[in-house]
Amino acid sequence: MRRDKVSTDGHDFRIGRRSLYTVLVVAAATMPAAVRAQAGADTSRTDNLPTDKGQLSLSNITINLTNTNLEVVFVPLDERVLRLLTRDSYQSMERLIQQHQPSIDSAAAAAGVTSPGLAFVSFHGLAPNTRFDPQLLTLTFHGQQFRPAAWVALSSTFSNQQLDVREQVLALFIFRRDIPVKEAFTLSYLAANNDDWGNRLTRFDEERARILGGARARPDTSHR
Picture 1 (cartoon, rainbow, N blue to C red):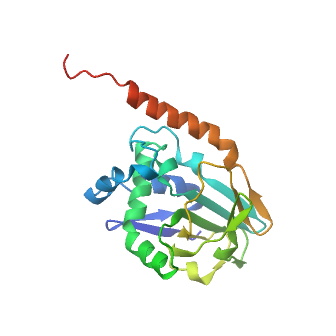
Picture 2: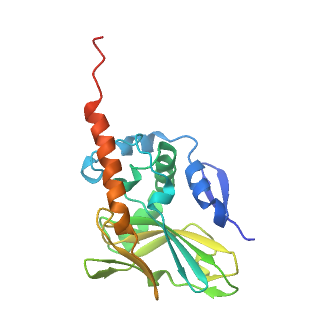
Picture 3: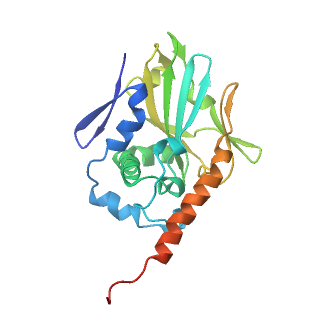
């Protein structure tokens, strides 16, 4: 079985199909200061959520899609849902973004994208010689279809756009707008569709309310 690697601060984490979530969670054993600073920088795109109070797992924001011989995993890298995750999951996603930020900025600039929406995407072959085309992965929102404007490959063979059975490649996808994580959208690849995101919104709203309610209700014990 072929396994790809994501490297963080000199450490290689080998990724297999079943260990994808685990690898992304443990990818950040410690966070650099740059990530910590960014975490509290821009509240306008974070719903004013702290970074360490969420209780959702990475699987709660992961979308799976299967089209004949190809399996796709899609994780929106949007602070409005990332901050609903457990601390470890949130930190691993932030570390992944920070590690590849220069490449993201370069790819976005080349595509003329000023405020990119980001997603982690993996393609997994279910049969020999499976072809895939990143441009065929689309988001449909309010009747409009959005394709990736660019991507940053995390696997050396991503550009081959062909997979053997059980082979997996990874990339960060760049869209021309924020991924609409607070509304229903459909993820599609050719004839395969997944519109389950809308069914998760109530759970996200409940978790958001719990976090913000806890922050407001926290008693002041400084004078006790």
